[in-house]
Image (cartoon, rainbow, N blue to C red):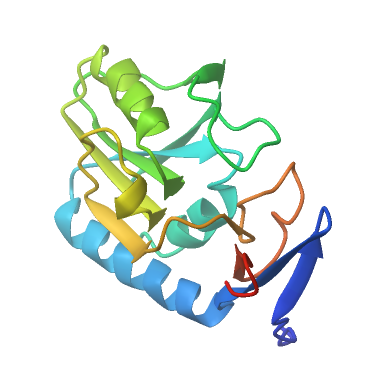
Length: 189
């Protein structure tokens, strides 16, 4: 595998974003989170559920470090559209294909911002009576949380600024970036 060049600044939709978290830091944290999950869920055969679209890159990296028996499934919501802030409404686009009753469920999210989407997901899953419900997210914005959501595993706490890359998008752009970039505002990130 060839090393990719680190890009310090990008432009998306005429806005500038500065490098915030490198691929190397993200990968190290993904391995760490997987090791914690492997220990807690050994012999518990959990179902990992990826929240599409944003979490797919984090999910694929995380799941490759999971060395316990498990299953995977996908759920797709929409709450942002093409905007930089949540619309305040959550729409279910793709429902689960797995049976969650009496199973250990691990939701994998890219970012927990206000907590609205995760509250929606938890209510949806809990209605089917899982054995347990855990949340792992790459990013969390503690200053943005509006709902009391328990996050069991998180990669990084970040400030309340807009970020893209590593699955996170801006109007469907920049998901493919290997690192995470933060919107530059008033001359600084």
